[in-house]
Length: 345
Image 1 (tube, rainbow, N blue to C red):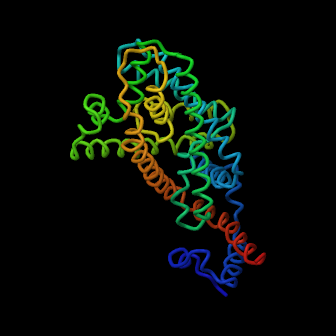
Image 2: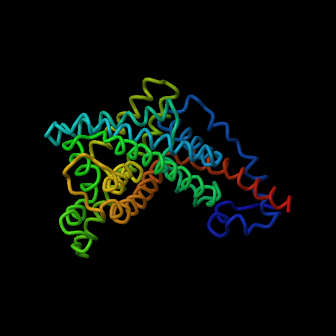
């Protein structure tokens, strides 16, 4: 029985296969030569693509505890990096220098993750376009993204909570923190809420600002999704890996693009600051933290996902011969598991 894989992708999902169709496709996929994917002599760009695909596809299968703890670790590193940015730049008074300092210090987050562990939900987004080709079950993908993202949020929340409870910022530092990491992430919406509350928002300006935030989030994941791939392209050279990570994250941080994980630093400040003794005379609007979730985090998450899809699609076109093999190789696992689950029943 000959199975046309292309037609199957376009017409049916795995749960609707008959047992015979599953067995036939598995047999056909197993007959393919995948040795090209293990060739260490591939060009840097192709090698990086292949290895990134494998790392992320395998990472979707991590245990619940590992996904959550990886997210928490990355959240801690985000908190540490942004706090360092704050202390280093709040007195500079020059926007260009502040951006350079942000780029230099924030880039260290990815090195902490590389050497000490951690994971971002935006990294899982890298493989989203391959999900439509049946490389993995959607429920596994959603579970992995959900667990690591919750871990990201909790990790940042714990870090920020301890900072605020410890009264770690003086009045000038806290004003800089609130302005740059909370209010400014909302653009016009943040200024309007700070001055007049939620009721001061107008429909036109609100949607226009959300559009800016959404576009910035797309640009963000253009770069973030290339960080891991660029690092994997170095074929294990540690120094080159560090350079690639730092270079891509440096560009992201300087651009000030919207990131659905990093922005939670400002969200937690907006939510928790009114509940703690900040030691500052800054007037905190109680709506700011929740407004960030509605008007920033939600559109940024969607924008990051779209950005990952667009950049991932372009990179898959460039690496098409390897993308096709990778999808087929990893689809074998999904099909085999489906068949095995039916046998147990």
